Length: 303
Length: 303
Image (cartoon, rainbow over all chains, first blue to last red; front, top):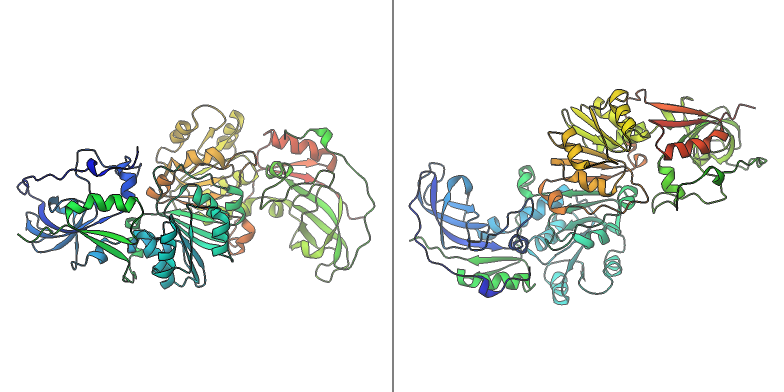
C-alpha cells in the first residue's frame, strides 16, 4: 500500500455511550503521533496491532477523568490510555494507567522506551552509541539519554540532510549521517572512527545488517523498531559470532524494573493544535518534517 | 566447492626444524576433528581462518613437550595447541596452553564451548532448550550440560533419522527432529509443545529463522556456529522485538570467567587411530557418520 492521503481521514461527531460499570469518561488532552503508526496503517505485525479502515485510530493519550463508574479510577484523575484521535473517550478503567500529573511530555514521550533500550544494551562510559531514525520521537530521546548514561560519542542516522544538521546543531549528537544517500557504510564509519559499541535500532532491515559490520567486539544492539515495508535483515552470523555481538529485541512495558532511574530530561517536541490538524500532522511526520516527539492537543475540556 | 575427497589429502614426512628460542617440540597425542573444518576448508570467514591448499591443516591438539627452548614451558608438560595433523610439531611456546593433565576429552572436547553458550543464554530451571546439530561435538555436549543447568526439556535437531534415535536413546535428549526432512517447523513445535526458551544454534541460516518463530517471550539464542554455505537468516524483527528475544554470538575463549564451574561430564566421543586415518574420519564426520566428539590418536610417542 502507498502512503495515506488527507482524504483517507474523516472526522465524525458521535454521542458518547452511557458509562457501563467499570468504565470511565475521559476528556482527552494530548495524544502522541509516531512513525510506528505507518506500520499500524499497513496492517500491523504479529506483535503490533493494525488499524482497521473505518474504525477510529488509536494513540497513546493523556486525559482527565470526567466521570467514573469504576472504583479503581476516580473522577479528576489524570490517566494514560490508547483511545486517542477523539476529544472524549469512554474507556475500560482496566485499560487506563493513572499518572500523578498532567505533564504530556512526561507521560506521552518515548523517553522511557529509549531509556529501557539503552539500559538493556548496557551503555558504558566512553561507548560510541549509534541511533537510527535519530530525529524521531524515540531516537531524539535515545541520543540525549545515551549521554546521561555515559556514552563517549553519540552518532545519529536520519533520512534527510536538514535533519542531520538538526541532530548535531540542536539535539546534541556528535555526528550524523543521512542514510538515504550515498555510501552509508563509509559515511557511518567516518562518524564512528573507533567503531560502534551500542546500536539503538529503530529501522531494522538492511541498515541493521550494515551496522553489524561496524560494531566492535562485544557490541550490543537494542532492537526497538522496524519499518513494516522492509524485509528482515540477512545477518552476517560469522561476524555476530566472531565479534561476540548481542542483539536484543524489547518493549519498554516488559521491563518495568528499568523504568526506575529514568531522568525525565526535557526532550525535543512539537505540539500541533486540535484533532482536525492531526491527519496533516501524521502525514507530515511520515514525510519526515518533524524532529522529536509530535503531540496533538485534543482539548477535550472539562465540560 | 564440493565436498573434499580422499585424494585431496597427502601424508608427508619431513625433518623437524631445529628449535629456535621461544619454541618447543611437541609429541602430539590427540587432535579433535569438527564440522567447523568444513567452513575452514571452504576458505573460512571473517573470524575463522581458512585452510590453505598445500599447507598442513590445523586442529585443536593435545601433546607432550619433548624439548623446550622457552622458559615458559618445560619439557614434559602437557600442552594444547593448534598444530595438529602431524605426529610432532615445533610450536611457539606463546601458542601453547599448558594443561594440568593429559586427558584428551577434558582438553579437546567442545564441552566448555557448550557450557559457556548455555551460561550466556541464562538457562533456568524448567526451560525448554533446543540444540541444532545436536549429535555433533558441541551439540552432544550442549544437550547434556543443559540438563545439569536445570533445563526441564531438552530437544535436539540433526540431519538423519538414525541420529535422531541416537539423540534420544543414547544422548539423553527428550525428543529430536530430523531437520533435513518434512515440515521442520511443525515437527519441532510438536517436540516443544510449550515453546522454546533457549536455542543453542550450531547451524544458522533458515533454521535459525524458523526457530525464532517458536521461541517464547523472553527467549534467548546462543549463536555458536553457522555453516559456511548457508546465507544469513532473514530475521523476523517484529517477532524479535515483540517477544523480547535476545540473540548472542559468542566464542568460549572470550569468556574465561564462565569456564569456572564447568562440570566436565563424560561426553560422547569416538577415537580414530592414527594420522593416516584422519582424512577418512574427517570425510565421515562431514557425511554425518559420527555422534559426539571425534578424536584422532596421533601417537607422537615420547621418543
